[in-house]
Image 1: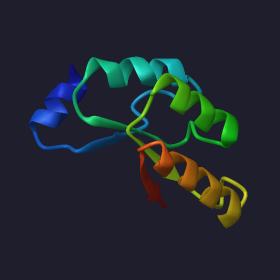
Image 2: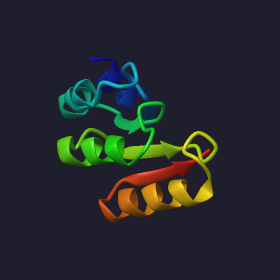
Image 3: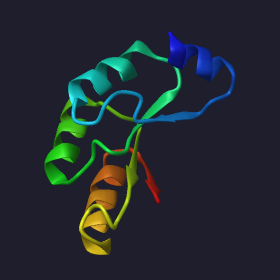
Image 4: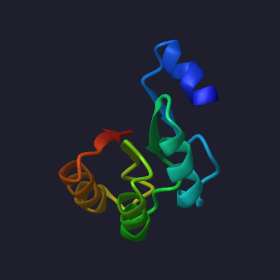
Length: 91
């Protein structure tokens, strides 16, 4: 309900609206509708991206190269996410 209210107020993207580490809950939040959902702290590497893609848990990924082991790992994740149709945000 909160994401629908935010979307009605023009919020385009909500970053990590649930605790990190629960991709299934993130998928449920996304399916409930409202503002688009991004995964941030919950995306720590390839396995997390695999889960996000499998569960269609997010509309966007927020990548922090320093937290992901550098530019090359972040680039790999960015390419995979973009190829799957997710928005990619680098911070």
